[in-house]
Image 1 (cartoon, one colour):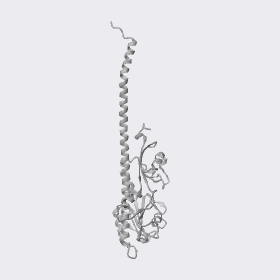
Image 2: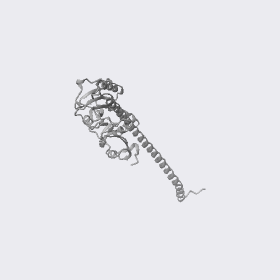
Image 3: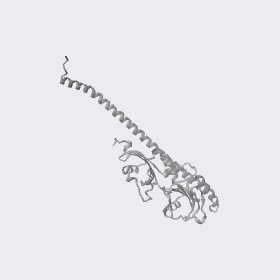
Length: 328
């Protein structure tokens, strides 16, 4: 008859078992942790790369659209300057009217094309009219001598370009409804280099710019933002946040992401891990775009007006729970 194992023998056997098992358990746990960390870090690297690519693409599309407008402005200004003045210095009005009408009809990018004389009186205006262009009659032309874009442009030297901020169109002192985002591009026209004749103004339909931005950022549509230099939304995943600098809601990015904006506003581009999440951003500077575009026109000597403060921020924000829930 076999004798039962003593309690001391069972304890000794358990110790030996644990002595063998624990190192394997530790190795397994370490391996699982390394695997998890490696996969998580790989995912984070992939996400960071994708954010950089998508934000860069959105910035490139904005630059492209701005460059196209500058090219159109240069073309029209060159035509008027070189071909549309009689020897007396008088504008060949009929000729320019036909050009403006064809231009706005075919381009479909501009709400208005105007020639304003040196006193601020509209001489020619073609309205896009939602796709049905119309040449405005002489009796409906207006005095624009007090408008900011006229005052700034008429004081420019030959070859300078004025670019307004992107904002909402105002008619008779009231924001047009439905809202119409616009930018104004203008250039002075000189019949002789020392005597200004007037200014050329393009009212660019900003909705096209914003639509192109949205398409470029479609892969990150739920968290990409376009902000003006002051931190107000021009385009947001939440439409109710847009145009806070003009609409009563006054929404501003610091209400939601104060840490992010403090960093983004201080530099041109970057990618940051903050308490607001993973922030990726680029800066669009119309002045730079215009300068690069102008260099492509060898016979032009155009420069930008001193509007260094005119810039936009393309910003993506990935929340912590999607980027690194255990990182911070």
